[in-house]
Length: 86
Image (cartoon, rainbow, N blue to C red; front, side, top):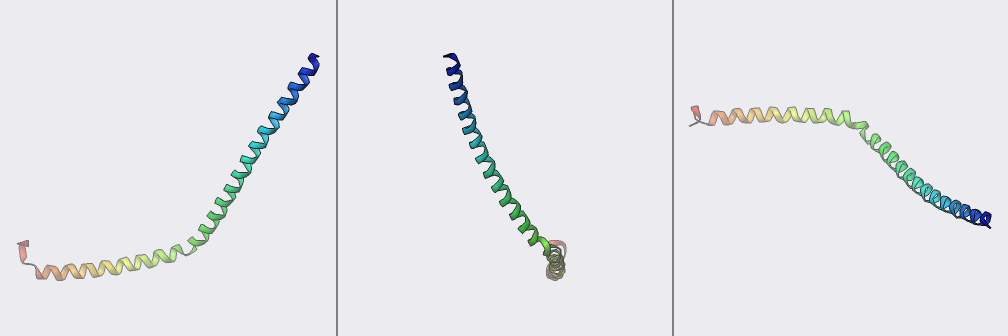
């Protein structure tokens, strides 16, 4: 009789273990899918960064042109203002 109770408890423990492992595997699969999505998004973002050096060179040129214009403007304003800042 005691032997049957032990077998039933073992069967229940095995079923609980299988259920918990099933939940664990489901979570692992969701994590794997999310990590694959992150990886593909990262690869796509790297593809967009190929033109970055050219864009930075254009930005440097634009900043230099704006700085030259600002210096010219400041020089013109300085000529219009009275000496001594009064």
